[in-house]
Length: 95
Image (cartoon, rainbow, N blue to C red; front, top):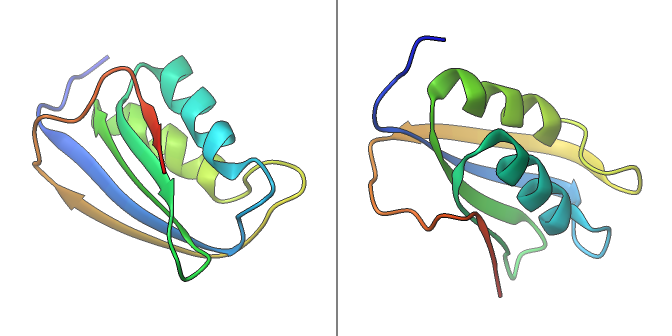
Protein backbone atom coordinates (compact mmCIF):
# COMPACT_ATOMS: atom_id res chain seq x y z
CA UNK A 1 0.00 0.00 0.00
CA UNK A 2 1.26 3.46 -0.89
CA UNK A 3 1.99 5.66 2.13
CA UNK A 4 1.13 9.34 2.22
CA UNK A 5 3.11 11.18 4.87
CA UNK A 6 1.51 13.89 6.96
CA UNK A 7 -2.13 13.37 5.90
CA UNK A 8 -4.49 14.78 8.51
CA UNK A 9 -8.26 14.94 8.31
CA UNK A 10 -10.25 17.63 10.12
CA UNK A 11 -13.96 16.79 9.94
CA UNK A 12 -17.20 18.08 11.40
CA UNK A 13 -20.26 15.85 11.34
CA UNK A 14 -23.75 17.34 11.73
CA UNK A 15 -27.14 15.75 12.24
CA UNK A 16 -28.24 13.41 15.01
CA UNK A 17 -24.69 12.63 16.10
CA UNK A 18 -24.68 13.26 19.85
CA UNK A 19 -26.17 10.82 22.35
CA UNK A 20 -26.03 7.96 19.84
CA UNK A 21 -22.50 6.59 20.44
CA UNK A 22 -20.95 8.49 17.55
CA UNK A 23 -17.68 9.31 19.34
CA UNK A 24 -17.21 5.68 20.38
CA UNK A 25 -18.04 4.62 16.81
CA UNK A 26 -15.36 6.95 15.43
CA UNK A 27 -12.79 5.91 18.03
CA UNK A 28 -13.37 2.22 17.33
CA UNK A 29 -13.01 2.57 13.57
CA UNK A 30 -10.01 4.90 13.83
CA UNK A 31 -8.24 2.53 16.23
CA UNK A 32 -9.01 -0.45 13.98
CA UNK A 33 -7.54 1.45 11.03
CA UNK A 34 -4.43 2.46 13.02
CA UNK A 35 -5.10 6.20 12.90
CA UNK A 36 -3.98 8.77 15.45
CA UNK A 37 -6.18 11.65 16.57
CA UNK A 38 -9.22 12.62 18.58
CA UNK A 39 -13.00 13.10 18.46
CA UNK A 40 -15.24 15.35 20.56
CA UNK A 41 -18.77 16.70 20.86
CA UNK A 42 -19.21 20.39 20.10
CA UNK A 43 -21.63 22.72 21.89
CA UNK A 44 -23.60 23.24 18.64
CA UNK A 45 -24.59 19.53 18.56
CA UNK A 46 -22.01 18.47 15.98
CA UNK A 47 -19.07 16.10 16.36
CA UNK A 48 -15.56 17.23 15.44
CA UNK A 49 -12.55 15.02 14.81
CA UNK A 50 -8.98 15.02 13.60
CA UNK A 51 -7.39 11.85 12.28
CA UNK A 52 -3.86 11.38 11.02
CA UNK A 53 -2.20 8.60 9.09
CA UNK A 54 -2.19 7.13 5.61
CA UNK A 55 -4.50 9.15 3.36
CA UNK A 56 -6.03 6.06 1.75
CA UNK A 57 -6.85 4.68 5.21
CA UNK A 58 -8.35 8.03 6.26
CA UNK A 59 -10.66 7.79 3.23
CA UNK A 60 -11.96 4.51 4.71
CA UNK A 61 -12.80 6.39 7.92
CA UNK A 62 -14.58 9.10 5.92
CA UNK A 63 -16.82 6.44 4.38
CA UNK A 64 -17.73 5.21 7.87
CA UNK A 65 -18.45 8.80 8.99
CA UNK A 66 -21.03 9.20 6.22
CA UNK A 67 -23.36 6.71 7.95
CA UNK A 68 -22.22 6.53 11.58
CA UNK A 69 -23.63 4.07 14.10
CA UNK A 70 -27.19 2.71 13.65
CA UNK A 71 -28.94 5.36 15.80
CA UNK A 72 -27.18 8.29 14.10
CA UNK A 73 -28.44 10.37 11.20
CA UNK A 74 -25.62 12.16 9.39
CA UNK A 75 -26.92 15.21 7.56
CA UNK A 76 -23.67 16.98 6.75
CA UNK A 77 -19.99 16.04 6.69
CA UNK A 78 -17.42 18.82 6.29
CA UNK A 79 -13.93 17.59 5.42
CA UNK A 80 -10.65 19.52 5.29
CA UNK A 81 -7.06 18.28 4.93
CA UNK A 82 -3.96 19.58 6.67
CA UNK A 83 -0.46 18.50 7.61
CA UNK A 84 -0.85 18.85 11.37
CA UNK A 85 1.53 16.75 13.43
CA UNK A 86 1.44 15.63 17.02
CA UNK A 87 -1.96 13.95 17.10
CA UNK A 88 -2.48 11.61 20.05
CA UNK A 89 -1.98 7.91 19.47
CA UNK A 90 -3.98 5.90 20.32
CA UNK A 91 -7.03 7.75 19.03
CA UNK A 92 -8.85 9.54 21.89
CA UNK A 93 -12.32 10.69 22.85
CA UNK A 94 -12.18 14.21 24.23
CA UNK A 95 -14.75 15.87 26.46
